[in-house]
Length: 553
Image: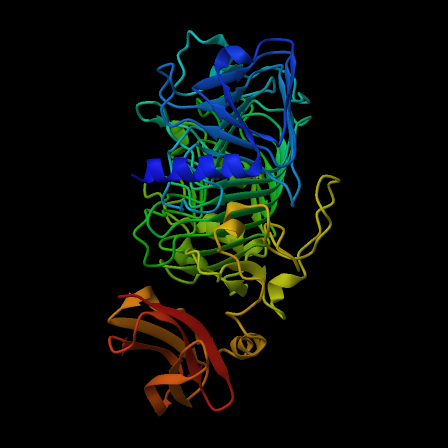
């Protein structure tokens, strides 16, 4: 029923806007040609469509490309595959992004983050070096009899074109049983390719996966994907800046799953350099697996710097540590200086608040207590402090603002990268004073963003600087009752108030109670309050701290 309704809405949209509808099958794109897709048409991919070697596909800003859910040629799904030697130039703008989505998408925001796997995705294959024994490989799920699905080579400067202001939505269908497509797959893509301002929204597998190559990427978003947010493997050695991941509370694994090579000892191992990432997990009480913020394994190296990792249900980081006799691992790269984690904020993890709590251990490894990883984090200016993001929400309720609150210490002081690829900024995380993800993304269209910094007041920063801490209530959203934890640096007289969005006091769970210094936990009954959004405030003699609370039925 949803499919029929969506298709009817789409047909009405196409007719009223004067769009043409163009079906694209594999035979429509041949070798050595130039194709121009324009915004006055909606292009529908019917099955696996290959842009063949020496061909160029130019896509105009504002163009919509849709994948058919059930291709007519018997393929398992629809996807666009840019082969080695071909180029895609998809150059959108913030006002007119290029959208890849499902045929069921009426382009008004009727689909949700739960609508995934409705088509395949975008696959770009290049000639750059990959860490495989033969120097090349085949895209997962496509028959080895299909030579156009090969990637890898020796040209690290290879140019597969450009993606700019591109939103890829509701994909991740299976190529073959057990092999779903990433929202954006980059296989052996070289640094001559430009990738900037790309969003993956509601993909059933990983958001973006790099299989080797050297491509350099800025302003990436992976939102509410079913597996990992950012995934690299096969010796990826590119650069990245301003990467944003937000995970669903119901599904999703690691924000970053990072592998070195296949097999582990194959050269070259992964060693990308990433600055200014903001990775928001599924929340402390999520149903999602949400294993780690960063899983670093299979001999990966690389650098994460000036970044923010927050709101994960378990530990923060796993650095694979195997017994020395077993061969190479990522812990060895850490010791050798090929894996560097520096100048980052780590905050709000279910496993605890200290570096010892946040690091995974390998009982049979060379460092069974992870003392070496903990020392590395401590010695490289990693902080277990609140970076004060303006607002975290995983619902389309206008409350997500991944920027930094005024006065946040994370807003300055980060060492500025010197490499010419990177913007010279000294703040931590993916967002400075402006939200570059506004307007052109599904996150914006579907109503997630709030332009105001509404959930953390400046006085909260002052209070926390003096040792007053109010943790977000959990569970949140809550039914019937919720738990609140707070810390007092000294004995104080404390009240807890619940106020509605108009500022009216609707409950007072604690009234002027004299409490000792230390951490306190309170169970709060909220069953008498109607479903909605509220503000829960802790008020001591000299401070007030406020957190948002959502009550559901």
